[in-house]
Image (tube, rainbow over all chains, first blue to last red; front, side, top):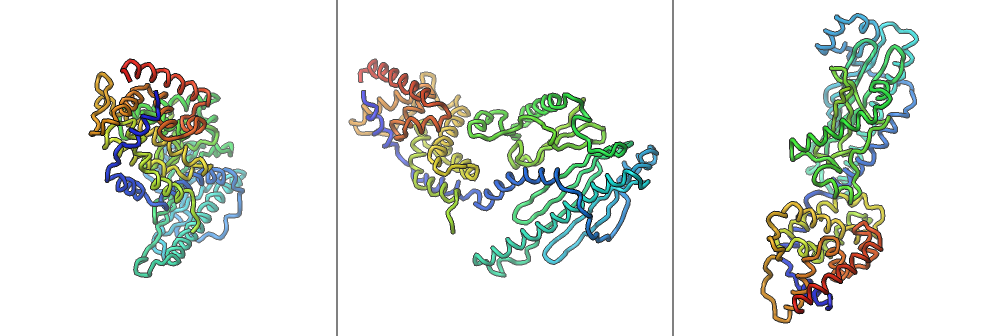
Length: 308
Length: 163
């Protein structure tokens, strides 16, 4: 027996004419820039988390206070009147707001600040948080604008014309959302986003205990065995979502799961003390994973409510 | 402009597309299916190319994607693709000299999964056993023992078929 005999047959497998078209179409289906950007974003994600955790409380800098308005969320206002202790502790105000065009940038910005009713010992703690938020926003505006200018330079340097460029602008969004506020507990979400070649969004969460002046952790809220509790719940929810909707995909789960593992694509494994979360209206912890973190990009941010 | 891993992957794919097609065909056994597999493998490979830490591993890395895509295709289409007795789909007409080749090739096609991969990659694609162990993510000894048991099985089945 000679296996080499089979090779001749193998080599004679007819190559269809369409092969090169199919290959070229596949190559052209996504641009190099897009692939590169997805990869960079995936990689930077980790750096953003680190940045967020270790930002030193820097001076808030010069604030352009265009408007100052009390948070007017109806639910929040109602709660305020019903729970007197809450009003006594803190309010979330918009300290910086700008909606409009600034040169080549379309800006929609609402920057929050936590204001304690009785400025006392606690003010240093919320002051640090406020300073961190201001710094995130300032840095974000700066890098977004730099990125856009680099892109513009590259566009013209590679032979783009003024006509092709047209009136391109970049959208920059800064927004916030009070997720939960009751008694001394405040859960605040800060969002930064930009849109130009593709849209990108970052979310930051602040879960504060204003009486002890501490950042709340998953362990504080769910107890010692928070890791097991979250992991069990998240795995069950992922499996349920896949079962209910075949268009949902999570790395390492379902039919493509084994293949993901072989290719070294890691999906959800465990929560850690660094996992992002907020507290929802019902007072439950909601764990958040970024786009690409545990699922393909089209799935977007992934949230899992953990009920005790 | 400097060639990065994306450009290298693209030119590697374009140069070797016929090999990928044959490899896919040897698993899938039909033309449209093999084209599907190649298409998916190219998309997948390019999407992941920046994760490839060692550009010298490009070849084994991409073969692995083609093999994985082929197996996934078979899993998805299992019901339709293989008839009850495991007969391979009809081939186009070949010269009689090909008959013996065809027989060997078909017996290879009937081998169980991990053995078949070793034989196809080693004898038809000319990869070393070391490379195959990287592609399949198994250790070298496992690859060797799969190869030996594949050879044993082939010898037996070809003898039975009177080849």
